[in-house]
Image (cartoon, rainbow, N blue to C red):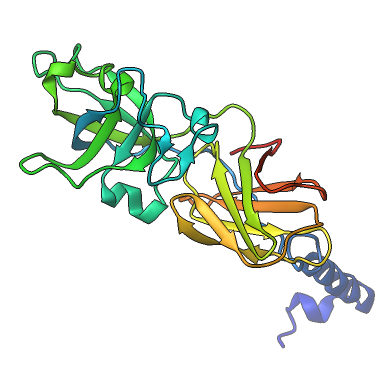
Length: 266
């Protein structure tokens, strides 16, 4: 080691202090304990892309909230209102696209629209048929209330442009648990930010350690681990890799068939 090295010139007490400081940094909370990454920033809108839109259901949105390929039905469907859409298989992505939000812009005036490039924000709650032959881009099958905000009913099918946008939700993420102690099923709804869910884990307050759940279909997640008798915490990861942890969202006496709401969202 050269004579000019700071280590050769430093007294022994100083060296010991530096070594202890480095060890303390390694053992600091969030470093050695592997705590979850803290997310910064907000979801950013995506680029505009061309597509086409049709409509389904009644003029009040009836017939579009009875389940569908995402599994949002009855009370769960009310989280998303009447402005929803079934999206083509590529956007549905085997259920990973459920809950995503899109701004859909209609055609120019004179092209079947209700005005010059009117737009509406919708939530993906179902799967649409593949893109219509002869039409450009992905297919959005909008509810009638959504379609009528960008085009006239007589248009039937219209060219659109669309982009991913942040989902704005009221209140925290909701978890609905069904099944039994040997096969738990959890439906995740009312997710803000990116809106979709690409991974879900659960943890109990005693014996159940962090356990990844598996997507069954749509936005329904399952595990065969016995979760009964424990306060449950869930960790959601969205498509942009941001995570939200709902600590003890289900009390120790939680019950199958009930929905529990977290205090926070993305």
